[in-house]
Length: 323
Image (cartoon, rainbow, N blue to C red; front, top):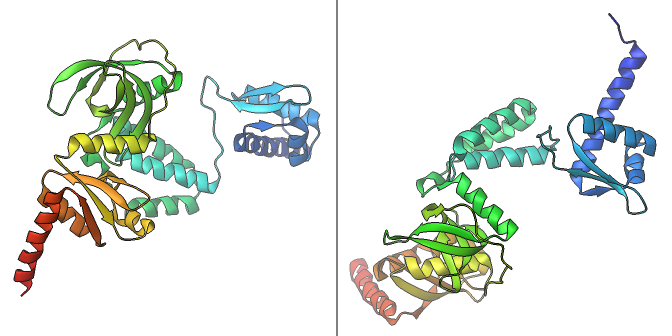
């Protein structure tokens, strides 16, 4: 049996520490010139080359290039090797997994909990205490909305990335289902539902689709040249959702700073413009009036006139009740 002397043990420890430092540097930015890595680690460029080969043996895929523009880049491999996270990154990942475990993606809850369990087993106690405090102090209601299959989201995201047309069956708000073909642009999450903004080829116009109502067909359609929507994706989706979800749309001007309005306005309440104009609506004008009253800021009704009439009637009623 061969025993290592103290010098050999020290050299092995020094190499292991240096490999961890090298891996952390490679993960911190896309490209690293060899001489800069050597300077950061306090070694020669030859030692850097040797350490890169050691990381490759451990399963890390590292690309290298020679010449004046040469260097090293950490790439994606066939297997998932260990990752190095700093304290803030580890906390951010753990909190995100907590949220995903109670989120709106079907089947992601159990997977998120498994990943969170593995992460917490490796975390030092100082970080576990921070994460446990967040988990104990928060309650999620995201799961009360409709959930989306994770495979649907990943398939749609891949089609967006690869510029491939989607073929799917879509169930509208009336319950009717029909085939659709669309060029996907962006997925938008409003805090309650997932939406897809896409160019509907059959209707030759931009459309907003609820992801939980989509049943994808395979294979995808042909590749397409991406189009530019008239608004940014989030604005277009909110406006599109408003036009179909609200029986009684309304436009009001809120007389308060935008930062204060943003604090009290839920993302699904409507579209807020920079001039303080809010496009909103509800199932009835009474619902719209009640919602505006909960904001706690002064406002002026721009449209519709019937909402102004209703507010006058309610004001007289409340005045009588108070007197």
